[in-house]
Image (cartoon, rainbow, N blue to C red; front, side):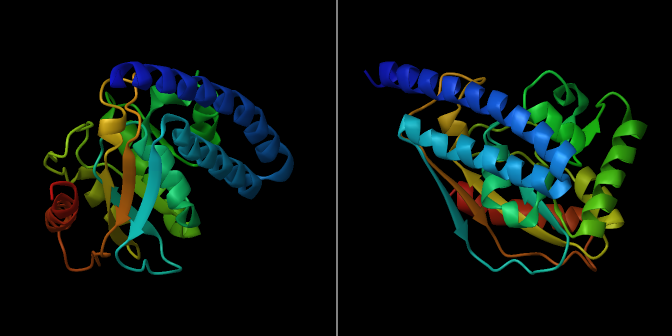
Length: 244
């Protein structure tokens, strides 16, 4: 019976999801071309608010826990575990104050209403995973842009999604590059819980009545620490939350 409910409520949400993407694609184009970048970012935040609170259609909830204050007026590198595609709407909406930008594969920069447009004009890094030089240049550009504007960059050092609570080892490449080009930034680990449970396989079906949480943990000052040390500190802090 629960599976039937999951399929029905999940199908309703996915229809809602598609409608939101189509409507906000038009909103984003108008906002960016008529009113400018700030208006565009506001439209992106509104889109992701709709996507997140739309989870109520499945009986699921979204929550942010703040374990420590995040310093103001500094660029931020959010380091998070990665369970699902739905990690990203939660981060954009719940951490909207810091304007988190993402590294994405270039294939997502076209063909998807709203999402592709935002990736192209919103400042994200679109990388070719087969071209290391191009990928590095894009990440450096993103880091400099975020640093100059005191925005945030969000990265998932596990590389690929881990849909369970068992974290994969955090890689250091992204952390190393970003801390180099964002010398005044601060590192903030983010522990994401249960998005993998909500979205266990592919993009559908969804698991109804799931409680999803994004927890911002104690900031880490990168000065005097190697990328390896930063990655281990982030992994350890996140692991204590998601594997508890």
